[in-house]
Image (tube, rainbow, N blue to C red; front, side, top):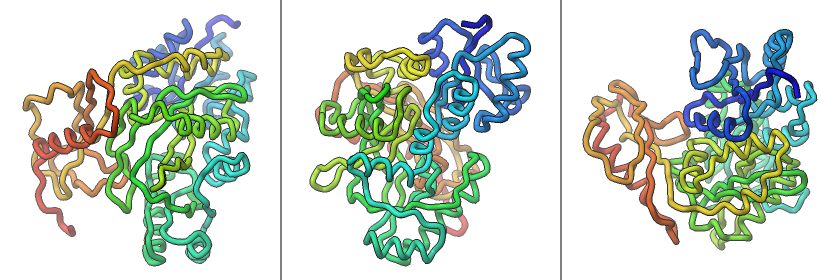
Length: 420
């Protein structure tokens, strides 16, 4: 152990990731740092220090870390918390001899085509897919896989650019829409977005995400989260509820654990998205080598009285915590739901009325003058609420989306938008 060590969290200063700081403090008694390109203008006072570096770029991080090493300060480990920092964090860890995920595991988790190949090779049930770059390749893939298909960028997330196509014409339009999303957000998220996945559609709106703690050659499910999706042709996430009524489904949890080991994820939390076919068969859609986003970790903490970031950071530090996860049981239900104004120009925001007793927090991000569009991805939200119930639901409840819809109708006054 070196003097003046610290834990470097990448992506922890992101909204709805704040509890990562507390989790890291619970995992180890060391200063907790974050990284940002301009700490003077974007200082986050939660952290013990803000490293001046791009958290998405390994070279930038290494330069900044080595600058502090000259002053005797060294990272114990670098821990990624979102998709955009997984590669950078683990490159830095390997370069400095701090452990970290193998480069192949990072590729499997960030490149959806490589992910699918690894899952299929391990016998993990996942939809058929093909990688395409152009419209002719798209149409060939549609012919091979058969309609309907889902089109998505191979290296993005947050439901960005994910579109359902039921005809060849919709597939062509969907590829153009997906490319438009990458043109808008690709640079900000440091992704290539030069290829797209055409995927067999699992025709169902029944979907969960599974939070899994990974170890060397094994994994253990912590929680199953019920997901609520927007109307087709998009797949925007409208709400997440923990625990799902499917929490005890061993076929489901076994599939999620096998998916993680198939990709070579041997530390930290992984986020596995699974859909159920019309016959109830579970299919792995995607796996991310980081904790779930959208505030899911906060809901897990409330439901299980256990900070999942403590597990994530502790695992990166080398602790075997799978038995802790196996013993965790939910004590209440917690949910996050996203506010969606009616399509149009928002004319007024009416906040301040009494809230239902189950609402634990509310955040309104929209303001008068903003344009509300149909729910397509994370970028088309107008706010969020967090909810809590002192009971565990035995079947899927629509309460999160129902409460969010009722509040959104009360809060947002929307007029007709030009061009709609």
